[in-house]
Length: 109
Length: 127
Image 1 (cartoon, rainbow over the protein chains, first blue to last red):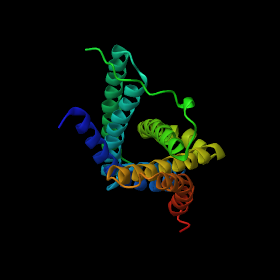
Image 2 (tube, each protein chain N blue to C red):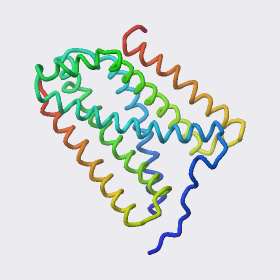
Image 3 (cartoon, each protein chain N blue to C red):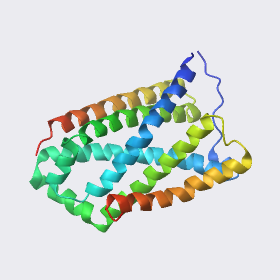
Image 4 (cartoon, rainbow over the protein chains, first blue to last red):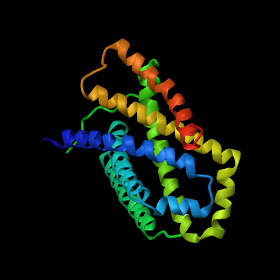
């Protein structure tokens, strides 16, 4: 299997995982977004939201990094600029979810 | 190695069709969603500052602008969910006929508004 096929397959698999996670998250976000501090912390620090939000972050950033790199492939011709853009994208796609997941796991009311 | 892949023509060159509208909207909502998720990450991080510091965020989220942003995000998520399902069906080899792509495109566009209302009503426990 070549790299392009592998990338396509990974995008499809992550999109299948993301559809139920996004549906669950947006339903809960609408329900909690304007509540009190304690309710918000309870939502993010209790199960199953703790695990589901973490999974959403991992898959959302993974899927986005793959999708945005496709946009770079379509619109950026200069190889150096494209490489820098892809590396920056990948660093953000690892650091932001990682830090947020750590925060979710140390959050307590 | 020199990359001789052709670049995509800019979108204004094409005549607009439902499929192209869904396609470009899929990319735009994808970017909106990941930016929103990043802001949500900062929102989660801000919880570490404690209850007193959260007051401003709470006031903002309870304002008309805050509620409008959440409603807009619900539409953006709804569009992405339906459009992604359409993509997956096409990946399985179905729905490539011109008439079918128009119908499924319309289902994504109109359905995203219905799904937004449905999610909002369920989320707010009106249903």
